[in-house]
Image 1 (cartoon, rainbow, N blue to C red):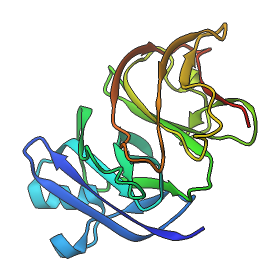
Image 2: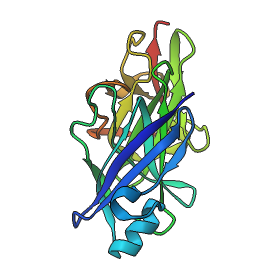
Image 3: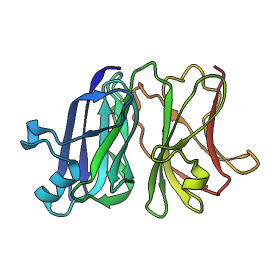
Image 4: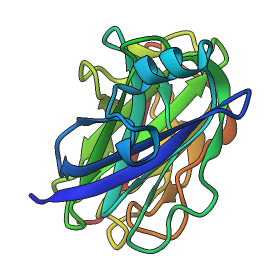
Length: 233
């Protein structure tokens, strides 16, 4: 796997901006992207820089762009996901529409970091980023290995959406397809305990011209809920 460029920005409710850049983001590896020293003179963890530079920084908009396939990006705080971030691919102009709003603004604190997963164009890892009415965010991923149904699991602990978001109401989400565009036979479905779809979200192509940005929904998570999609290969 190659090292690729990754860049973007975090914008606050006061329109202050944190520029981001990493020129050696390893594909297929979750890594931190820090501030762009070309613009701010230092290469720091995003939350630390924002707090020192602006005092209070409440994140309202974001946009992360990866050179190849985009998979997921989020703010990590004390081992948890504080906010999932909109993102795009540099392959076909997928940064149009970025930075894009977050459903629920979040204050950045010292130590809060931007974590990004990018992949080679051949990689089949897909991801879904969600926001809940409680203000919680989470990210789920799965890599298809053949035909059939594929269930998304948490990027933090491998648990399904039913365990992770039991009792929550998902109000916004977006999905990135990985290298599955020619094999897809469904969108992403949230299934109930009987395997019946209760809501769905379409994919943005991981290397396409449309960024992954939050879309509204009203999906309730239950213990036996599953988040899935299907392919024919």
